[in-house]
Image (cartoon, rainbow, N blue to C red; front, side, top):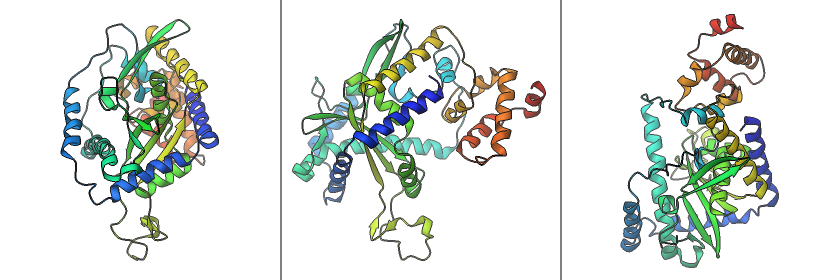
Length: 361
């Protein structure tokens, strides 16, 4: 999968979001959540419902290995990886393990913990707000709530003679008036204002859109909801008149708190599914042929969560190093200096000998 193809697929899906999706479905979901969390009993769980939830969690504790069929298996949440990372991940290359910033560990823990309670809350909504709760969890064939391990699926696909598998365990499959919807939940720790600004400008994250496209392939469901929640909340009381709070940091406007929840209703087409399957087939081919693709500037935008950065850099050719260094110089003297793409490239080059790369050029 080239980065250009990834951007094209994401743009195509955004176009679908803008052109064909009614905006009210996401708004209805937010309205249901708000009705529940405003309810005076939302902080109190029903013992029977809570027990069912945790008993299901306990049933699925433990490691579940993939079948030993020799096929490259793509997790739905990992379908936006760079081509080089996929090759390293599916080879004998060991992932790099090193200590991280402590707050990042706490941030990961926070996101993992919150989704459990969001799922538990959705299970309680019918009891608390009655008919206002039109979004509920579907049930699996085994009678369990359709989320995470209970809903996990792995299927094998073939494109142009190349076999590979995709697996997913979604945050949920919702039932809405008899229609099934995919549900994915994401936390944002960048802050309330930053989250709203980014979502207003770019919409749902491109890698999240690829994830739900993969889930659509597996479950045969072509619609769903992406829910974003800021872990920063508005001031308990309005801060609009608080002169000690800068205008750019105020969390209330026009007498109302700024949204800490944002939902996007997506619709996946057959073309989107085919595009993704073709991309994954090409990545699987690289793995089977043990071919490490050439480094590109765009790939440096995917390094933040990659566990193979050191291996990747050690495999760079002199030509690739020179190309990256020259690209950084162009960024530094352009209007993009210091912007997101430039920062990613500089981070990738941060521990490389730039003078040596220039000499190689």
